[in-house]
Length: 441
Image 1 (cartoon, rainbow, N blue to C red):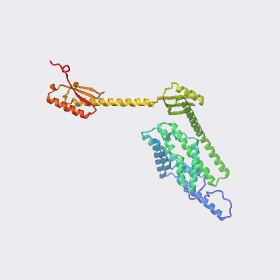
Image 2: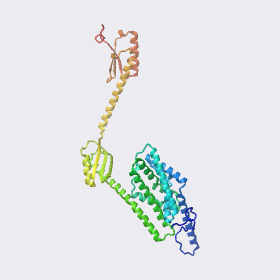
Image 3: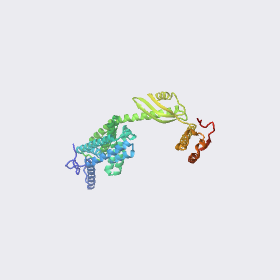
């Protein structure tokens, strides 16, 4: 059954009354008001049908939105992801589905479904191409946040759908901006692509469930609000009740996995709170938790993390696991790494040691440079230069009579030049005694 709408291309040719069932009135003013309401609803349907069209503008916007969302997810940038939500044109066909269900308009429903399917396919393909080309394929918090939808996401989508219909009927474009941000549509599709490219099927399925949740909740909310505003005159009250019951049943079925996911998250939050509390009781006064990760895997609580301690506790993991089993009544697996944290005294000693080592290294470098400067030209033999790096002292053993006047003067100049370059060192002469003089044949 398809109702017909005047002025809406592709939605029929026969006249159509978009208002509710008319009662017999004799008041011309009431008839005029009803006519204005009918015209207003026809214009709204025409606008919804126009936004649900599959055209070049829609395809261009969905390509840009998918590219922006994918890059934002890979970077872990919330601002970029929000930008993709604003560019996305998927709200148009989803609203088309909602109004089509309200008016039982098969043409509008079919058009909206085709546009939505094409948009999903294009978004996923564009995201897969970008992820495949990207050298970065790390799991960011923005990606992980779209893999575990819950009943809270369903509630947000329902409320967003109601706000979206109200904005369409009242022509409030600013409200639609908020709805686009609150009910994310393209980022979950990019997350599906990430899961397919990287082989993370849990990511792909979780993000697909989030997209399905948002899509159905928005469309069904739009249907109910449109019916309450007298769209779809051919339906009786019984038909409306059946329609609402079907929508509630569909959302009820959808809420089952969302409720399970929310329950799992709630259990992890409770387990983390208990683990953190018990771990703080086991640690000393000066100890602290550096990182802590609590997961529930196959009905078992898995805990890993890092703690900074003053003294090692040999049975920390065993004691924490025993307390968790008692508090949570579940099997527990604990892997806590203990790192010895430094006290203020230890830090000071380490700093002093580092300074001492730096000083000794500098003296070694200076002594090597001084030795190289003194023995340049081989006027002064290496074995005649005695070095005391600890005292920054250099003794040059010389025999002026054997050197001769010119060589002695040259050595004096060399020593003076080196001394000027290293004023903190003491470079002095040492005369050779007869016993120290080399033996002559």
